[in-house]
Length: 196
Ligand SMILES: O=C(O)CCC(=O)C(=O)O
Image 1 (cartoon, rainbow, N blue to C red):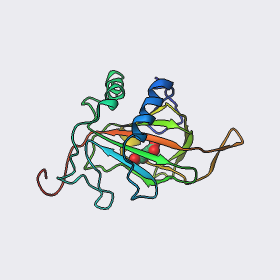
Image 2: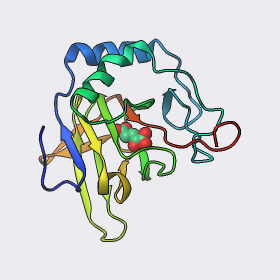
Image 3: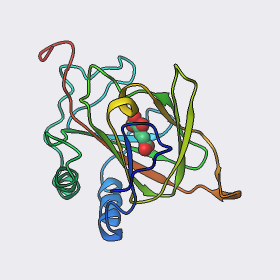
């Protein structure tokens, strides 16, 4: 597993976490499932639906167990000891060039200590900021790489993807294409009816 000392504590970046074949199969499975178009970017939720407005996983949010086509990648996450309990919630985000995600810390009361995001298709830059120290770190997320956040990277630093058409890599402008990420989490608390 690769460790980058310049990255926030608790952040691990692992290139080539999955094979080309597995990446291809994941994209095909996602494109064979309905994309939700209610946000600026398209999304799909598995396991539990996350309520972006309430910033919560509500009591009625359970969607069922994760689909079979996610099992191999979940097994790989467990084998690599990224999760103590198998993740039970997955969000797919699709970013067309020019789309991003604003700076945030993943919902603290909703999700557990371990969060992992798998990148598919186009590379793009992710930015991490520490709100207290003002530190800023950048990382190019290459296709098939895994980003694992725990500790300070999960709880103290925000992460974001700037809404850009291109990123600068080694002084060169690299145009973005379509990117999809799969973010794996454990739901630790639901709110509202039923499961509060
Ligand atoms: O696209 C990514 O890699 C990160 C997604 C993310 O931050 C989120 O779903 O909260």
